Structures are given as C-alpha cells and as structure tokens.
Length: 364
Image (cartoon, rainbow, N blue to C red; front, side, top):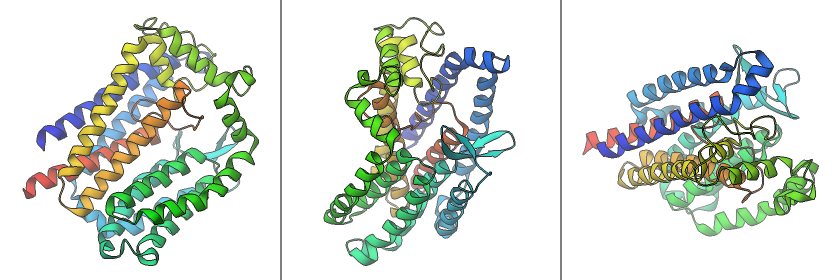
C-alpha cells in the first residue's frame, strides 16, 4: 500500500497548494482594504498549513491503535468546546452564529474537532460491539445517543450543515459495519419532521430552500450569493479569465475565499481548473476507498471509512452549493477553503488514514 499512501499524501498537498494560491487571489483586495496588507490571509493560511503538517506527521508517527484507549475521553473532550462556545460573551460571533473560540489571535471552530473525535469514537464502538451491531438497543441506540448530543450542541450555534454532516458520517460508518438497514431508515424517517421544523421554522433557512429553487426570486437579497457564484463559474468559460484577474471577488461574491472559493477557481481558471480540482478529489477519494478495502484490522478499517466519508461529503456539498445544485450549507471545501480549523483537522484525518495504511503494511 506504499504507492497508495504516496498518492494520497501528494494529492492532499497538491490540493493544499491550490488552496493557498487561490486564497491569496480571492482575498488580496479585500485584505488590503481592511488591513492595508494584501498578504494578510495568505500568511495566516501558510501558518495553518505549517501547524496542520506538524499535526499530520505527528499523527502518522504514533500507533493509531492506542487511540482505542482514549476514544471515549477524546470524544467527551471534543464536546467541551461546543458547550463553551455557547456561553455568553465567550464565543466569537459572526452572522448571528456562535461557532468560533478565539485562541491567540486565531479563531478555532470546535465543530471541526468533533468530526475527527466522532470518527475515532465510532470506530472504537463498532469494533467493541461488533457482535451486537444488529441489536437495536445494544448496537444502535448508544451511537444514536452520542450523535444526538453532538448534533444538539451544534444546532444551538446554529450550524445545520455540520450537524447534517455528522449524521451522514455516523449512518455511513454504521452501515458499512453491518448495522441493520431498517434501523437507519426508521431513524431517518423519524428525523424528517424535526428536519422540516429546523428548516422551515427559521426564516433564513427557509429562504435558502426557496432561493435554491429560484435564486431570482430575491436577486439582491437571499439569492445574491448563489447568483454571483454562478456568474463567476459562467464567466470563466473553458480556460478562465486568468489567475488573479477575476472580478467576482471584488466585493460581489461574499465568502469568496471560504465557502465559495470553488467559484473563484471556476472564474479565473475556467472549466479546466474546476475539472482538475474535481478530478483530484475523485482520485483522492478512490485512493482512500482502496486503502479502506485492503485494511484488515476492524478498528483501522472503520477509521478509514470515517475519514473517507468526512472528506467526500464535505467536498461534494461545497462543490454542489457553488454550482447551485444544492442549497447553501456553509461547509468549506477541504484543503482549499481558507480556515485553520478545517484545514488542520482534515490534515489530521488524512494522517490517521495514512497511519492505518502504514501499520497494515507492517503487519503484512
């Protein structure tokens, strides 16, 4: 599996390099206007890459099997920041959401931490309770309880997109592990009324659904972002207008360097650029799937499945939202969007998968 590891490692860093370049291109003008330094976000992202690399190599150097002993404490530790972020006057608030904690001048998003912690916890639970996974009370209810607590805390921020990603992650891992499909289906059916309430009882979420169906209902309001995103993608054509030459980042497209960086890639590098990014993600996901398929250790296999689902779901949702194929969710594009928490914990997740692959090869 050495070639697979090299492929995953190289592909990951190619995506990170694309992200660094595009973050500078998408943010240099707004950064210069706000701070007088066009490289402000570029320098921060470079620092995040450094921290992420150290964390990734640190995870790769350890014995991943030792995580089984700390799976529960690690998950409980990941819940603590989700509680702290809800305390009055503690969290950094933006757009009406309390999702960030300020640490040394940087904003930390606790929901990114819990994604990795949940993967490790579920991998440990599934391997410990393997004989009972088809039993509703012993094999299905416990992870649903853990998931419910996590989702509740995240919804209070509020962050529906991350909550949905945790649900997809949990159900996918349980399905691959052999949980009864009817338990999953019944849970989904039972959750539909709550999902309907969460969407249509909140004005901005209801507006997102309506705007997804027809952005031109409110072109200067709720539909503005997705319209500008589609204009960026359409303007790029086959080859793009040129790196750094895009106009949508000039205060037209909100969150150009974060949630909608894919649209800036489309405008400046065209279909060629977006196609290459999509192919890189497809290749990365296929390579991860091959590793997961070949790993024989149940704990390691479930970690690989969790990492695979985590990255595949986030990338698919972000790209789908940018193209207008999905309602706006606010999930970053892994390795490419600006943001320390997302980048560092996605790199840690890849490091875990590479660790499992290396350990498996050593056993063989």
